[in-house]
Length: 204
Ligand code: 5GP
Image: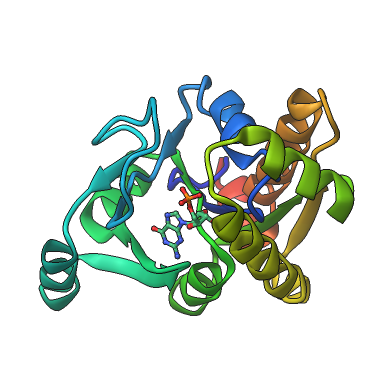
């Protein structure tokens, strides 16, 4: 018998790692849910409020921090991003695994508060591929691209704080998603998540 509570799964990846694509594959399963973050960043074309992010004002964001409604938050490249607490707790209680698509500082804060959280670092196959992907996306100005590449270097330097690393090769997002699934599957079977194994078994 495995524990019923869902796993808090942090998937961090520098800009261009393809974390959106990989996570979308995991989210096709009904045992995974996405933590919709709040942000003060403007929506990109195609992004929907309440689906990709809760797009809110800086004042609204600060209010939510002050009312204790953020599990964690950070400032990233000039905007605030944060994980709504109540929504996260509800999903985990329901038994679903919750994907937090957040950057490294947030990931560290999650691990401090929830030591059982599983931290996965998703990386492009190489730094040069990352740069190509970011420029190819065409959604950011050159200044923003350089800012995000610089940030990516800082993030990768903190790789040792993560539990797992998964590489996302071109055209192989399905493989990266499969690797993450196997990590979650192994975690579900870990002894630390399956308390009193002998007692439960011998009484079954
Ligand atoms: P983007 O602007 O590209 O959507 O996101 C910028 C960065 O912020 C990404 O690394 C993304 O994973 C991260 N991010 C998104 N939501 C959150 C959040 O709620 N908390 C933290 N700490 N980072 C977030």
